[in-house]
Image 1 (tube, rainbow, N blue to C red):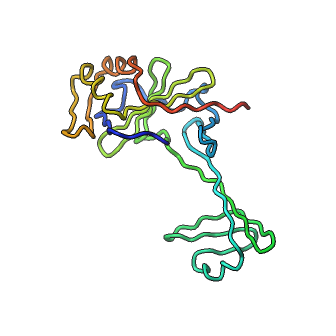
Image 2: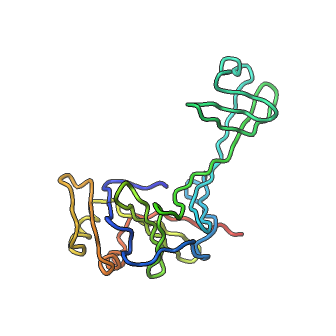
Image 3: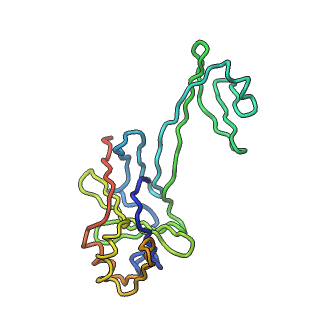
Length: 204
């Protein structure tokens, strides 16, 4: 997920506190979304949010002998071995050149004990555990537009301090630890001054 980082915000509890967790994404959020770089698609299913993107390249057949310990071409597959991990590419030879490609899936959220999904005022709250604290993201829909919102700027600290009583900011303002009440969290959402990424739902 491409986000602009300046300050890390850590919540002591999954938000909003005392609200029950959802065990699946609501239907209105599910679908395939176009990302502005147009190199990847964002998928929301019943349980997961993930990217899919195509990796492709080419290699001259004459280079294979010098790479035999890390690259194998056989039966329409190119196998790359790197740091003990194998990646299998679909491959096709044209002349002396081998063209290869594979689809990569990068999961960014999957409902579990460490990835908790909650709902508040028409928006979804993604809570992702980082050690003992939680990173919080907000998903909202406006027609076919998905808005992915998050705290990241020093200006957000100024907005938070008058609202949240239980808040600690380190000396150089790079980390913020907070424990808002449910009412305080709702008030934060109403400010609507987050950073955000925009995704457009693809037509079926």
